[in-house]
Image (tube, rainbow, N blue to C red):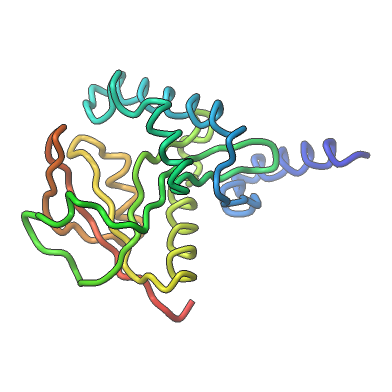
Amino acid sequence: MGVRENRKVARWFFSFFKIQSIMEPYIFRPAQENDLPRVWEMVRQAKALMYREGRQQWDESYPLPVHLEEDMRRRYAYVLSDWEKVIAYAAVVFDGELAYDQIHGQWLGEGPFVVVHRLAVAEECQGRGVATRLMREVENLSVGQGVFSFRVDTHLENTRMRRVLEKCGFIYCGEVFYPRGSRMAYEKRLCSCR
């Protein structure tokens, strides 16, 4: 039996016993240029889901391929892949976020922080804990770089992302504002003892 057949058997086994999201080996890495078509496909799927659910966070004008290309240029683009393909994307930013300077509320702490923007999970992987896994990988990356604060914002209507943030231990800190409207702001302090 070849590698491909072994992988198919392992996938069936994991999905049969409902342990795929725990056991499946994921790879978290900087995105490469050849990942962009797949990333754009996932972003389009996320936009369609938001539209079906009546959420206004992403639309025809944001995000676009130009935003993903800018993420690549700035080295913000990261992907999570399984054995076969990319299954999640996020812009992972260590350069700060101007909108976070004026929070209506209060951050948990001061100092450098990591931010995630434009998180998208492949449609076929929804409900498998992929977004949570990606967020945990960002935490590990951040701690590895000596940054112990993780901030993120999301639209009030984005209950999926809010559940992910709560599951990952983020704390609601207040509102931040962009030209496209206000967002709920969250922070998680990371442990340096990992």
